Length: 341
Image 1 (cartoon, one colour):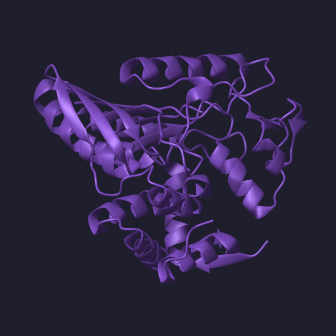
Image 2: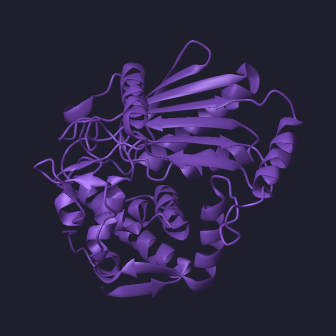
Image 3: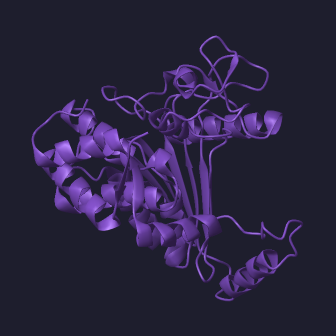
C-alpha cells in the first residue's frame, strides 16, 4: 500500500486550506482539524484525516452547516437542550461543553443533550479537555446500526461509544471506547490499507464471519464482551435516544455517508469533583497500577490513555502515515475547487 509520511504541521495546514475552500470559517476549521489530526497522532486513523473529504462532501451536499454552533435552551438550571442545526460535530460539541462547564461550576453538575449534530470524531479529546479544566466528563453518542445483537446475523445497534475524563497527572485519565469490538472507521481504515481483519471482528452481508474489510463494510461488527457488550451498547442507545429524541437502530444515518442529515444523539455530562484533593489521589492510584509487576516483562501495565499519549509523542517526532490516496484527496481539496469523491 502506498503511504505518505506527513508532519503534523503540514497535515494541519493542508486540511485547514481544504476546509477554507469549502466555506468553513477559520475558527471552526481549526476545531474540526484538531479533532481529526489528534486522532491520527494518537494512533486512531479510523477517526482521523480519512474523514476530512467526507466532511467536505457533506458541506457541499447541504447536510452539514459549517457556520452554525447550534442553539441551546436551558431546561431547568442544569440541562441544556441543544439543536445542533446540522453543524460540524466538534464545533457544536465544544460550544455546548463550554456552556455546561460554566454551569457545572455553580450547580455541581450540568448536562447537554444534542441532536441534529454531525459526527463528533474521537471522544477522547473532549474528555481530556474538560479534565484539564479540573472537571469530570462523561460523553455518550450513538451511530448507524453497525453492530449485530449477541447471537444475531445482521447490524441493528450502533457502536455507541462512551468517553470518561477525570483530572489526574501527568495527564488526565481518559477512557474512550466503543461498545463494538472495533469501530466501523477502523474497518474502513483496514480496507484503505488493504489489510485483513482479525478473526471475530465482523460478519459479512450474509451474516458469515469474515476477515475481508471490504466485505465487513457491508456486514456487521461484533459487540465487545459478547452478551455483556451487547447489553451495554443497547442500554446506551436507548438512553441517548430517550434523552435527545433522536433515531434508533436502522433509522440512524449521517456519520458514514455524504448526503443524509445526521440524526444520531449525543449526551455530555460534566461534574465537579468532590474536592481538590481527588486528582492527587487518582494520580497516585493510576501510578500504582502502572507499577504493578507485569506477567510479561515486555508488556508493562498501562492505564487507558497511556498508549495514546505515547503514540502522540512519537507521531509529533516522525509524522503520521497516511494512505496515499487519502493524502492525495486532501491535497486536491486544498489546492482547487475539486469535489471530494
